Image (tube, rainbow, N blue to C red; front, side, top):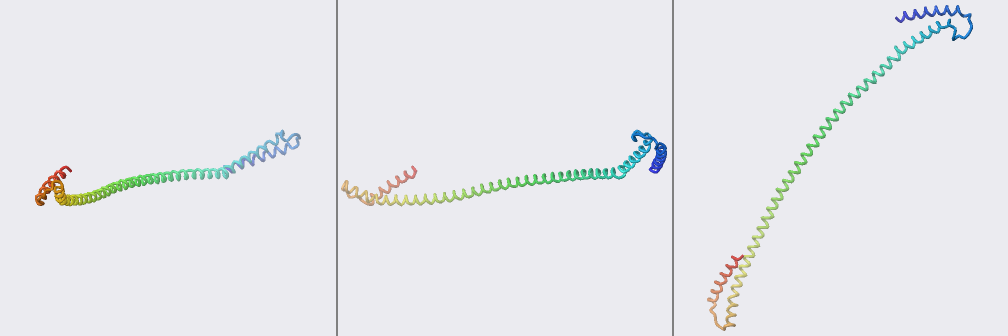
Length: 198
């Protein structure tokens, strides 16, 4: 096809060249000289064909390759971005799960430590209560023994004091054994009433 076009162009050129030589004798403005038109038309068509061939065979393929490469790069970048987004979503989901697990573990640890501290506090409270009760019982025993010893001492002293009082007031000699029996009997009932009142 290219050869046919070239042959036709050469034929047209020869035809135009002959007609141009025949009309060389006319004078005037060359733009208005119709005899030069076939030559101008030939070279214009030839230039356009050459430019078209250059564009279609050299420039346009390079542009289309460049556009295809650009489109392919855009598609690759979009796919990479999509896969990166999916990866980041997976990582984010994994991080959220790990954070939730860590929070639940922390909650469980806090609850467990609170339970353990409550148990420890209850044990310590029971131990302290037992020690305090033991000390209170020991102190009460000491107080009771002290009270009993003081009461016994008071009873012993009261017989001698009673004897002295009776001697001074009534100036009567009192039998010590009888006086001690009376005081012991009276003091036992007084102590019994005192203990029942407490």
